[in-house]
Image (cartoon, rainbow, N blue to C red; front, side, top):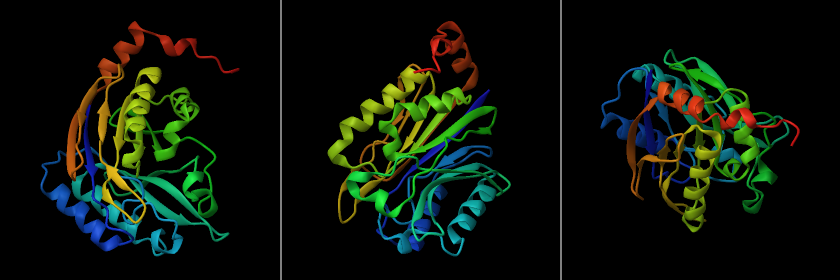
Length: 257
């Protein structure tokens, strides 16, 4: 059993939703995408990593409608970073999942706002890892700074996850950490990693891209450079299950520490 992955690495236009939606459509239109694929876009794909909640949030629901239409158009599942306004004036940095019928499947809220950049002042932390099913795989989406907290990934695997998605706006200054941590998360959890970053520049950082898909043994299946691009890969569920069966390291996890 296989699942086709489409990882869309964007040069995000700062705080410009319309321009960024156009970039998504253009990028995907230039790539043949089979039905029942899994399409992944970066964190905060329509605004960039901004603390301007009003600019980032999907106040009118247009971002969700765009993603729902995208999923229906390609008859595929879509995972993308969105921002939702919370009742107390802060916002939620989220990964939204839409199925091939355009219906919402799951929304995960980033559990670790990036305090160093002030994100915790403007965005509330989520309280739970979540898992959804797609093409026979169990998948958990996580967001950027979550990558530094291996316990979140362990929780996902404990819930049955076989694929771990990381959507991000991860800057060039810590690019080496991005690559090392992604490989570690794959190896220690015996899981596929789909990590989708952005490229380009915003008022605060430059971004290296390095969108990466890694297999459960820590081998890189494909990796992007620092230019906008769309990566493709096929994940093999039987290969993952066989590897976990041959090397049952996860069975030795302990819930008490």
